[in-house]
Length: 414
Ligand SMILES: [Cu+2]
Image (cartoon, protein in one colour):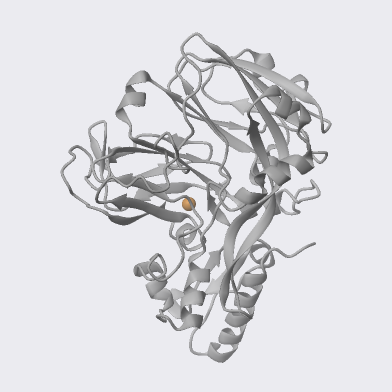
């Protein structure tokens, strides 16, 4: 089997050597074979000894590993820092000394009304947190919220740089970190930057005034039927950065992901091949995000799904919309298989909210490799109220990948 963890192997060697030197003074924790297969490392010693796992903890397919940034800073001797600084300080987060993280850059100007929706796929619990901002959720003031697998939280809405309830400056402009608050998940990649600018900054916006990391423009209308064209394809994605010891640089790492790729019309949909879709997405290998279907409340959707992979059956199971049993993506009749086949689902977006939508045909392997998406159903009030609307999806790319092996078999012992 191909090894995906070159950077980690190097670290394991480094840790092993350190252990030899310190055997008597500072006991360390031994990584089991299973943990090593999942990219876990023995870190620290004595009271600080622990196992750190790098599963490729990802936000919208991307992971920014703090250890890679730490090794880069130390190798460059830009500003050597300790492991404690890695977790406690801001050096390894800062964009002043390092490139912006690969994870979604969320942007807003001070005083803009921002919503950050969060969703979780994969077997673990995550905990969304954004620095410097507090929001009102019912009668509670929050700045953190937990998520179980397939759970959604869409109560985080506030003024950028201003806390929960007023447009008066509270946090102010700056780079505010957002992350999962399960500590090892931050280190292994689940963090990003919420960049608040002091004045209205349109650099990087599209002609509609939207940043590329925002959810797409709304489709449909109450009572209207729309056709949506989607293919399931294998596409190379740049998912994280590792530290290369020979060149002392940060190098992007690719995985062959499985994605839902929305297409503009029926012609493009019919003509799509594995090769054409890979060519189309190649320039966006570092920025392509999970497909989000943004709808106005009451829209009826005719969703055409075509499987252009040969390797696995695919379906689309939506949460939160109204459908009959033949359209839920879980029965043999509504699965696209073998490769090249099509299926059509019809349903109505009759409940506002943020809803998971994912493969249900070979879900552990397919969701692990990226076949998940989301439906956002907005009310007219939300449409006018929000200046910026983001969706962050927590996902465990490598862990799922390893559990559902690339050949379709399951990892032994799990
Ligand atoms: Cu987490």
